[in-house]
Amino acid sequence: MLSSRALRPFSALLDALPSQCAVCRSWPARPICDACVARLAPPVARCPTCAIPVPEGITQCAECVANPPPLDACMAACAYEWPWPEYIAQFKFHGHAGWAAPLATLMRSAPWVEPVLEQCDLVLPMPLALERLRERGFNQALELARRLAPAKVDPTLLLRTRATAAQSGLLRAERLLNLRGAFAIEPLRPDAVRGRRIVLVDDVMTSGASLFAAAQVLRAGGAEHVSAVVLARTGAPQ
Image (cartoon, rainbow, N blue to C red; front, side, top):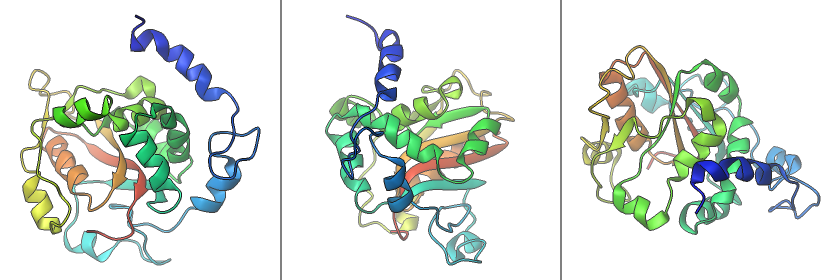
């Protein structure tokens, strides 16, 4: 059986082939055509440190002003609204790993994402608990990260040390407490993030608690700058 590394060039070739747009069904097109991206994922004003939508002219949301997050910057490609939840679910829960390429392209098209990826030293996918990884068969954040900046991805540096209780229904402070100790830097590489510029990658950001908890660990490890790039952002903290 061929290894995933051996199959990667073939997968990249398939990613580049024309197809039917999943949204408007135009042909030939990318899996998500440029017109649908422009119509359904337009750039909007967002808080620079948590990516929540803000009114034009507002430089930072009230929550981040009152409780500055451990992220220097946070960018989201789209709102978690139709049609994106359907395609994210296909990708994340139904084994359709082929969605990684078009969704990563959507992420790269978001304002400021390209410069952040170019200027960083490391791109770290948000790690999954072992149980989740077994259920899904792959880490969706890793698949996105590999397509965003393949030469900078390190999938084993940031670790998920334990599974956590469901975050739904918890307040922001409770979510942060729930995630305490859930992430760690690989113990055999304690200095790997020191002085580095790091980008965290994830698919969906809700309250931001997981990203903030991971960023705190990287800060404690001496990271110089920590940003996050996510595919979709919910409309309000939960």
